[in-house]
Amino acid sequence: MSAVRTVRTTDYHTAGEPFRIVDLTDGAGSGVPPAPGDTVAERCATAIGTGGSGTAPRPSALDDVRRLLVQEPRGHAGMYGGFVVPPDDDGAHFGVLFWHKDGYSTACGHGTMALGAWAVDTGRVPAPHDGDVQVRIDVPSGRVAATVHRDGGRTTGVTFRNVPARVAARKVPVATSLGLAEADIAHAGACYASVAARDLGLEVTRAALPGLVRAGREIRAALAAHPATWHPDGPLLSGVYGVVLYEELPDTPFGPHQRNVTVFADGQTDRSPCGSGTSARLALLARDGRLGEGQDLLHESVTGTVFTGRILDGGITEVTGTAYRTGEHTFTVDPYDALGAGFLL
Image (cartoon, rainbow, N blue to C red):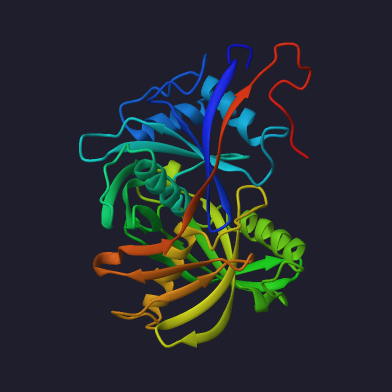
């Protein structure tokens, strides 16, 4: 970290979930290393680092910047963000490497929404005073899009269109300290396991968060070797990324209504309804015949914020929410600071 002196970021939140943007294509700060690779997926693998046979991955120099921005005192255990990098080709406006306190993710719906708003708000992608504009973004799982909605010169919402979602397994038994549950596994840019909270004697409330997080961590660990979590495109997209613990609410006139908390990485909780997790829920609801053409899923988070999702032909999902800028920052590293890159509690 000694080579890094300053890092500039722009921060957003999408339905309460933070997203810290570092633009590596525009000189994010003195000493910030590049992300080598010919594609976004390659750049992500480089950022994660590689190890020799039988050894653990060696973090890259760029990963020092991730840790600097997610760890205290500059970040916190719930921080999320992304490095903006060149796209795979001219078909996209830019690429992004998503990260959190424990590493990297291959998909992020709330981050895609924030990036769409950021691209329009900064003028990187020209937008009309009134109407919609699509921002195309390459992510490690493929090409996604954020349609930014404008009214009166203001960004009023963003619709995230994900890579195709598919159901991989249903009713997989999983043992937890709260009892036996059944998990539904779906891939939606990342792999998600869905479990009904009531099967574990839980409700999706703030008061129940400690139990929900514990259950999420246990379910993720229990499914680590399950074959349904494997993605045909390789290990980068394989393995349970998040556990969606959900509860049913009364249907609306437009379709199903659910509340969830998504536990991802090593016990991190999504403050939003989780964009890619919502895509996974949409695929499962469609498979059950509960979500048809012209219907929407009203998807609430544990904080009370809402995404609206729908499924299109070919397993394509769309999720709509709001994203707002929360600040711009120039973070510095004092070479004499004993805490250096920071810490996590």
